[in-house]
Length: 123
Picture 1 (cartoon, rainbow, N blue to C red):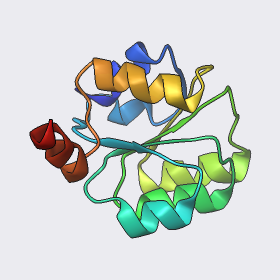
Picture 2 (cartoon, one colour; picture 1 turned 60 degrees about the vertical axis):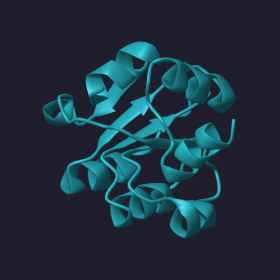
Picture 3 (cartoon, rainbow, N blue to C red; picture 1 turned 180 degrees about the vertical axis):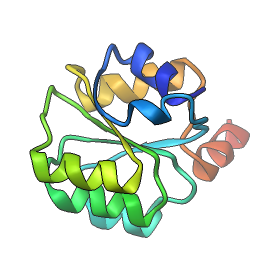
């Protein structure tokens, strides 16, 4: 899946990052708590969140994420957009709630990482 596929699946609007839509993504996470993202996220390329502040972009950048999807139609401000552009990140916004957005991505093959793989083995 690439970022453009994420955009299509979530019926999302592109905020910035049109040059990176072909970037491949294999894992995602959803959280409004950036401390959890810092503590538990490994190798996810897409962050789904309803938290709209500059720390969201900084956290995603520190974790080498390529795309942030703002759920519930949240709109990032100009400072966030400027920072994302400087860091080469894609910002999207979708009208879906986080639970629905994560489910749609899961249904279309985007997974959440190592813990998801372990959970599947336990079934």
